[in-house]
Length: 355
Ligand code: NAD
Ligand code: TYD
Image (cartoon, rainbow, N blue to C red; front, top):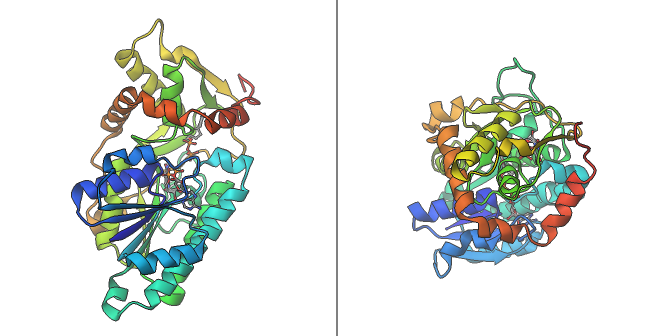
């Protein structure tokens, strides 16, 4: 079996669902169920013996080691993290705890388990660390996209904590010989995306008749990747990646935020028409402190060496995404109850309009 950490979050749950749709190899899913973890994402697996869910914290090294010794996975796929830049600005502590200390605890448990395996199992074992393009910092408009050799220059507490975790993973390969793999991916979007991130927030707010907040001038650029393409890339790297290597994953879809928001408004104008256009709900608000201007990924290594490239274009992926949110408004309503409201208050109440 494989161990997935953070398998109740956005990308992790998509990964678990896609994995079990294509394989009968069981998944041990370790997730703390923070605000971002949601077992409703996995409801289709209820009663499926191939999915074993354990609520637990990656920071608890003894508990993780006990799980490893009990279930004896051949690989660990490490998704668990605090993942939202704005939350890292309001409260970096949890990012340091989970992303750095948690990854360290997980690596230590993995090292202990892996060291005791027999030679064949040891060579076949993999620790795949899921990371972000944000560790590379911010690009100017004409800079070449990030490659695997771009120097690290993280700018937010989130990206700094992910950068630290990447370095730890690298060190465990170089020092102990543990067969690690690291993937650095661009912005994902798709089903089960928590509506604190741009795309699901815009869809949910648009449909609720609320303001569509654009930070700053909205000309910040991100590369967007449909989540199932990311999951396919991870499966590919797990199967064929070279231990110790890093692989950048991207969608070849660089786009300014304003363009993304306009696209969503135009799609909703067609799919869920209302009086006027959803574009009328756009509001420019105070920018994010330290806001990275541009991310862009060169995913050429993954294509050249392992033959992966994204199956979806932005147009096809975003159409599926909008359709999913229109068909799953109960899922959105459920995650928006409770603590979500205090987050919205905390992040948006003090942002002045027109800034
Ligand atoms: P998410 O915030 O949606 O989910 C994170 C999951 O981890 C949740 O289920 C949460 O309960 C769990 N978790 C948090 N702390 C934990 C702990 N201490 N122990 C166990 N579980 C814990 O995040 P996501 O968007 O699915 O991102 C998954 C991974 O991919 C992260 O490592 C993130 O840095 C990386 N990544 C995300 C994106 C993106 O666009 N979302 C892009 C590139 C890389
Ligand atoms: P986000 O989805 O938080 O991802 P990240 O910060 O990891 O790239 O944000 C994507 C972009 O959208 C980023 O440039 C910030 C911007 N943004 C807004 O303009 N308004 C919002 O309300 C949010 C949440 C993000």
